[in-house]
Image (tube, rainbow, N blue to C red; front, side, top):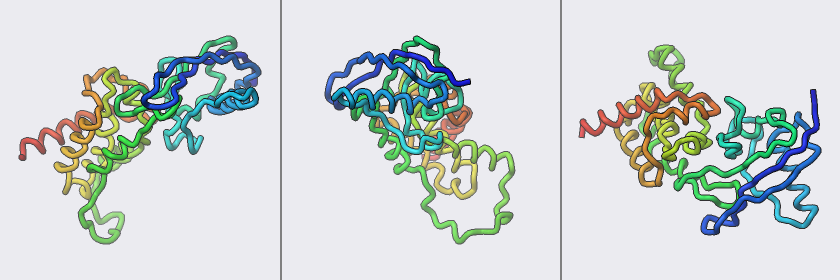
Length: 251
């Protein structure tokens, strides 16, 4: 049942990557519990614009939970307190009347703040450019049954490929590690014969790019898996470690 609630927002405001940021407090009344979190931010921005103030900058695109651009750190959780959803699929029914909601950008050296709640996530693109692809000639499109792949491997590869690269794993990690993202992208190829040809090069190149871009090390606390909106398993990290170690031993 729809309810109307009044809330207080503590929003991180920062004019640029080299500027000093701070929290600004905004009361917001008349919020429908049926509205999404981003619709609530639209309400806030409309009020700010009407008052002649600068609106809060935040990133978003599809608003359907499939692109991950709506990367907000809400009350200590990437994408907010709900499970298995991105910020755009979070609804205000998860919050109480009179509650104070703290909203921050992703916190990582690899994700510098562009402005307010928007961060530069091109680091993930650079990691993918380092090795997240198949470049060898695999021929034409084969018949679906021509390449023997077990259902277990096919399912695991698809589960790994469901990673949307939102960066929640980095935001959740105390070391700002990108291992869950990198391991998912390595796994989706390592489990399939088309990806095995370049497996060693891929693992080394993507890990090297991750380190160069300023992401931290994994200490297996599992926060990344707990906060991932697509339920990517940390078993992928074990697979990445095996792939990387085997590649280094082969050298």
